[in-house]
Length: 225
Image: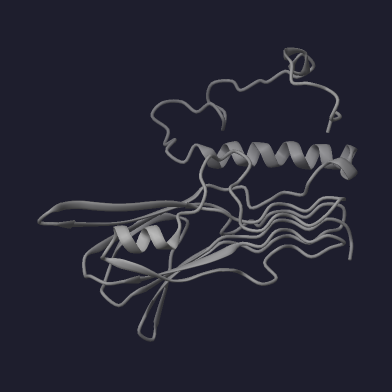
């Protein structure tokens, strides 16, 4: 946003003053729960994008999925614990120059997807039955937001514990300059004719035959279509 010819340097931070007094959302008082620390950081990141988007929309991207959607599948057997944990990527926001990227790690993340082949070799209490982009999950506009993804896990043994820590289930990624919002995230288990929906934080014990379906959200679109 400041130009490609400006190198990273300390002076870039001099005009910026950050205030986070004790007791505010970004600096809570002990013993406030802070496990999902990346979620408020992402919301602060989005607030900056939205503010700059009003001043220089042609140089700012729309909000993306911008969430650390982490899940784990674990089981305790005689040989000990097995734990599989993954951070699921979503869609990036669109810009004046083009569409948002599909299914990528989020801006403040160092995690990428776990290859299905590695999962098949390393774990025997579940398997991946679907891994795909979600059509039309990116917000529409002159340029569309990036698509989110779906991962579907078939549970192969009873007693598999599932845990989720996520966001964007209620408030989607906002579009910019007339672009539409991206899709919301979701999580559910299909058990026969039963559909069990989960909120973005919690845990449960799954059964053999369950199909766990994880969907990440898309990025916001840019400009009116």
